[in-house]
Length: 85
Ligand SMILES: [Zn+2]
Image (cartoon, rainbow, N blue to C red):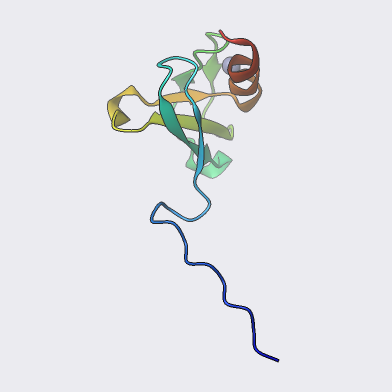
């Protein structure tokens, strides 16, 4: 039996997830931050509350605008992408 060839991967990072950034309206890459990677406090733009060190969350990185990246609580981002800020 010939094994079925897997399609070649797109040029982007494997497993990359894209979404529409609610803040900038641009396409953005969603990056996961694991609890052990969260070493600083960030202000979540969804609820204006801090994301404490050691709390897993997500980063939204607008394509071509890495300086506009923002850290979000995951539920806040989901709410904002569905219903707006
Ligand atoms: Zn939040």
